[in-house]
Image (tube, rainbow, N blue to C red; front, top):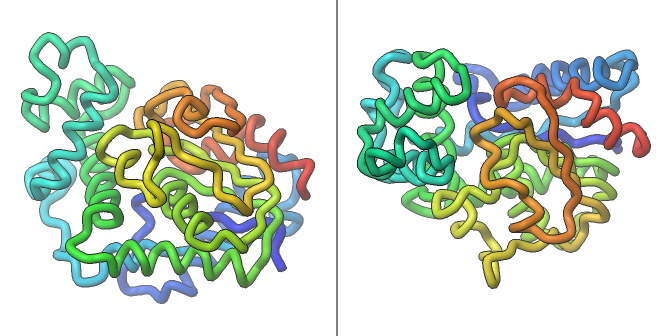
Length: 276
């Protein structure tokens, strides 16, 4: 039994290494980052890592180009999802031009400027984000989605944690895994930087599908808390509780979307500490 199961977000695929090795290494990193926020030693954080990224890359073509050309090799589903994301962010500069007609690279550069980010790295991040989001939600068949979801459910079932912490795309996979297996009991679900409410690209594609524009808390979850950075462009729309009634929310200033800033924050420590 582990007190915490961690579920990663995008950008964690590491080819050439076994899933078990990656899970062990990433789990140690997450435990150290969480421990830093808690003011504890990493060994005091009992954490198991649910690694699923390899299921989203199975049989997928190798990404081409570097950061500068990352957006040039996306398919129509990925490009459409990015356009929907840009639309949800409602950037004033894009509104003036018609958000969904702004060229992809220009739209992403607008986002980089809006959130004071490096344009080159933002293009690479956005390409990675929506490549994996699309692989999970829009795959040509159900195999990747099912395999990723069942991987997360299996780790939760094996370790029977009190707490599940999910980041980024991992919040979507975890949400569906816990709904698909209502017998899984979790005292606390903590979601970080979640795109669950992102319209069209994510929200309407969830399973179970939202009803009357609202999602539902998984039946085995005792308490659901969502934490979103004010400057996290992935964690849209806000507040999440508008779309998932009954959850609790906390906001703060951490660091652009990455798990490290969220895990080491005082907001996360305050939520997690009572369960350890």
